[in-house]
Every structure is written in C-alpha cells, then in structure tokens.
Image 1: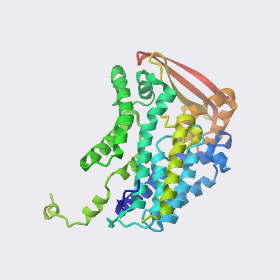
Image 2: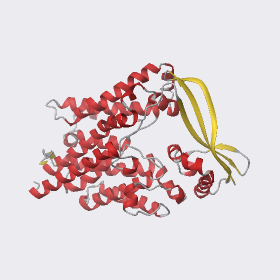
Image 3: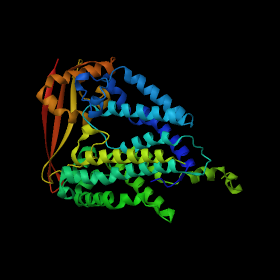
Image 4: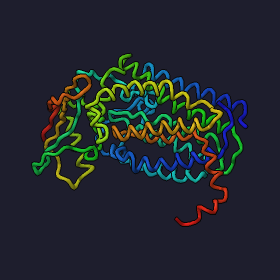
Length: 276
Length: 142
C-alpha cells in the first residue's frame, strides 16, 4: 500500500482531475445547478446531508458552483496543493450531495471522490519529479482500490438486489428498451446477446477487475486491462448512453502517467517536424 | 518519507473508508452515499414481465401539450421515478414541478397541467412483444 510511486504521477493526476471538475460541473452534468431552482419540498437529503444539517439547495448553489470551479482551476496549476486540494474535495462532496438529494443517486463517483480526497495528502509534486514517494504510493493505491471496488462490489449489489439468477433476468433488455441507441436497439431482436452479456458483465466485475491491482512485470498487461475497461465504458455509452466519466478519470491513476511527462521532455525526432 | 504516525493514520483511514463501503454494500442503501451499494442495474427484471418507462407531460398556458425534458424542471427522469411514489400519493406535489419550470424558464408559458405518464412494455423471453400500454399515474391541474 505504500510502495513508492513517482511524484510526477500525482502532479499529472492533479492537473487532469482538477481540470475535470469544471468540465463536470459546467458541461457534462449541467443539471446539478438546476436543483437550486427545484422547490425544497422535493429535496430528499441523503444521510450525510442530514447528519451535517446541510442547508436545502437554493441560490447559494450558484456561489458553490463558481467557488468550486475557481478553486479547481487554480489547483490544476499545482499551486497550494494541500489547501486548495482539500477545498476542492470538500466542495465537490457537497456538490454531489446537492446532485443526489432529489430521488436518484449515481454510482460513478466513488473512485473520483477518493482521488480528490487523497490528492492533497501528497503535498508538493512536480511533473518532472520521477523520485518515488510512499505518500504518492498510498494515494495511488487507495484510488486503485476504490476504482476496482466500484466494479467488484457492483457484482455483490446484483447478488443482493437481483439474486443469484440476476444473470438470467432481463435487466439489459430493460436498459435498452428505456435508453437504447441506434446501435443497441436492434439487439432487442437478438435477446440472447444481451443475456450472454449479463454473464460477461458479472465475470468482468468479479474476475477481471481485481487484476487491475496487480503489479504486472510486463506493463503492457496493465495498459491492456485499463484499455479494456475504457473500451467497456465506451461501449456502455454507445449502447445505453450512460458514461461513468468521473470514474474514468480515477481509472487513469492506475497507468504509469509519469512516463508521458518524461517523454514530452525528450527532443522531438526530426522526421515528425516534416510537414505531411 | 512518511513518518510512522503518517503511515498509521493512512492505514486507519483506509480501513475505515473501505469498511464503511463494505458495510454499505451489505446493509446500506443509496441514502448512505458515498458508501452505499453500487446498485446500478442490480435489480433483476422478469424476462416475461413489464418494462416501465416514465415521462412527464405538461399542457402550457397556450394549450400546447408537451413532453417535459429534464432541463425544463431541473429534475431528471430517474429523479421523477425515484419520487414517483410521492407524486402518486399526493399529485398536488406536481405543482412544484410547475414552479421549478417558472423559475428556470420565466420567459416560457407556465404549465396549467402536469402529469406523470408510465409506458409499460410487455416482454416475453426477454424480448419486447410490441404490446404496450400507457397510464397516467399522477396529474395536477392549476
């Protein structure tokens, strides 16, 4: 859990995660801020909101939004990593409570919330610093566990809420009937494909996802696995128009991102400068 | 290098957070966010059962009937479905959707009627049979 990881990876993860926050808040989940205008009678605060006596969303949500976007934008530069990182983690969690206190909780946030929570614990990190840090190692390890838990434990949720015969149900048929795309709707005529995919899904969640945590001697296996999971999320988007974007950002922590920083520093081979 | 105390604190936090997540997965519900179970698509649908798809319709001041998109009221379809029990029990609560629409879109004609409509698709062997029925499950008039 404390196996050293280059600080460069933390620096790159910070840039990506903190730049993703404004993208998420302003572009990909624009509905959250609209909750400020929904009358309080439809607000159903989650346990954490009730425990902390958080106020019912209203005009202040707009302020929260811009403070969060500003804090994340500055944090993306790497400045004041502990202070700004902590602020972003806390504000983003509150943003999530505003998002999910109206009758529906999304399940694509756990890995990203853990990533935001642990990034400030590493302290200063430069993109060119390849020296190993055990604090960075812990941050990457727990983010990895959170990402894998999202897959692995969802299989247990299927067992708990759907039962052992979830795999033989019509859950994916329902998903396609309700949210189908041009690509997936034809599959309704070949229901066996959706049926088989339910087995594949549980297999991937239970057997394949833990392999993401293995330190493979051959790093190509890591790339292959992570790439495979990105492929899975692209396919989910193309078939039922659901995308686990924040989760996909957290998944990046498992890749040796530090290599890209160093590679960029190398001189560019001459042939790439020739116009094509 | 982390100090011994730094390592200990991290181990404690790790055990605590993932312990809560495991407890939430086993016993909790969405209410326990962020430690609730990852229950997306976890319920089982009967291959010979019904698939329900919900929408909100409104009649605005000009008499136009429209399907209300998520952006009109600030509530997503899944949120309407999450609270549909409350709308069934107390259809007057739909007036709040109309109020939300007035606040978000003051330039658009107000809603005089709001209703929640469920379309039910019949399945056989995990395939839609083509048979479907619609039902208004809650309706409010100004």
